[in-house]
Image 1 (tube, rainbow, N blue to C red):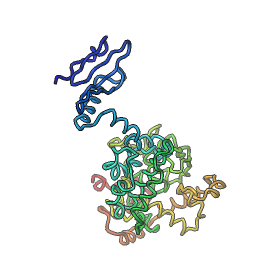
Image 2 (image 1 turned 90 degrees about the vertical axis):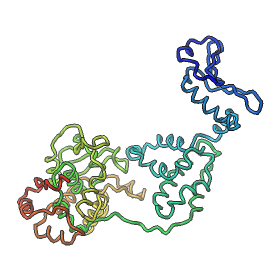
Image 3 (image 1 turned 180 degrees about the vertical axis):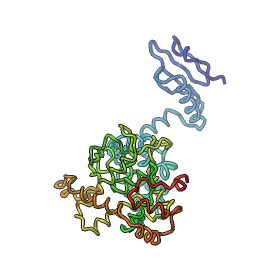
Image 4 (image 1 turned 120 degrees about the vertical axis):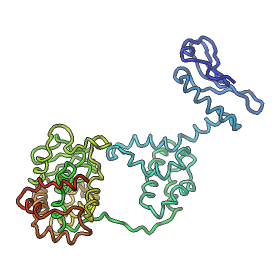
Amino acid sequence: MARHKLTDAECRTASKDRQDGAGLFLKVDGGSKSWVYRYQLRKQRKKVGLGPYPAVSLAAARERHREAETLVKQGIHPKDQWEMQRRRGAPLKAVAENYLQTKQKLKRKGEAGRWMSPLETHVFPTLGELPIFDLTVDNISDALRPIWNDKHPTAVKALTRLGQIIRWSGGRDTRIDVTLTNRVAENLGEVAHKVTHHRALHWKQTPSAYLAVGSTRVQLALRFYMLTAVRVQNVTRMTWDEIDGDVWHIPDGRMKTGAPFRVPLSPQAKEVLSRVGGKGDGYVFPSPQAYKKGLISENAFNKWFKDHDWPTTAHGWRSTFREWCVSEGVDDYLAEVCLQHEKRQKTVAAYQREDRLEQRRPIMEAWSNFVTGISEEDFADTLEMKMGTIRKPMSEAEATKWSRGSKLDLIDERREER
């Protein structure tokens, strides 16, 4: 049967019904035009509308026509199938994408698919195309059971976010069971999960770790991170216009708490910035080679620690800073504010809205003095304590140069080439 008889020009100028082939017609009724598919099923002649023209273009009409033909071959009336789908709602994946648009408080609005990632990996492959009305305790449990024990935190994230989507949909359609994910958790059962914390250095080892860092742009960013103890993405996305003298203003859009934050910059932190260069309105630590918006990867710091055999992660460094605060008798509340931690108790938070900038300044200066003040002997002792060895330990000549005060000029060329 001949197909695709019409052209776009013929559709625009048609003054009477025109046939595109295989049962697809452009129906002309006075000044309006619409697409109609005529077919025969169980010896009965039927027709179904595919939408108005030109809102539904010729190409779109042909796509809907192919979908309708497939249903007819399966013995299904297209109109009945589409009506059933309309009653059941859009597929889960489409609903999730719509819900994500409402999540304005997500870090960077869910950029890079982080919020959706557990669903994309463990839920959508089997349930993504199902209408939300077709979700059941059994099919959700089947999707998450393979990771419920072995990757329990990821499974919980996937289930929690699926529950948010379902409850959001239930607020718009009372036919949706908003308790579904609660019953899934009960169905899958409890898991004896052992919490694994980020690896972290003992606070006494931090000066040696800082000393081992070179002076490439990425490494200067790592130095700045070590001195400020903020979150990694605050540093990788930092711009020059956020700096005002010895204060760094982090906007609310980059804060996990959703509120702007001020960081007092120690002399050592300002010295690092002075070595970067390229002031202006752009990023302080740009990476023209990076595939993602010219930014340093948030995994770059972890990679440096791993490549040089330091038993810590970037996030673990913040834990080390917290332990140092305990050892120095730093006020608990001020230590938490330094780490940008939000008070969990709403009553306490309501009365403690000050960021205590000037009270935090001597703490961060003391931390910077500690991290950057180390003798050659202490450095050697720490290397022996450290798990493994650095690929290219600092030479005696380099250590001597560092001890004279040229800390940030130290560059291990061979190590950086790798």
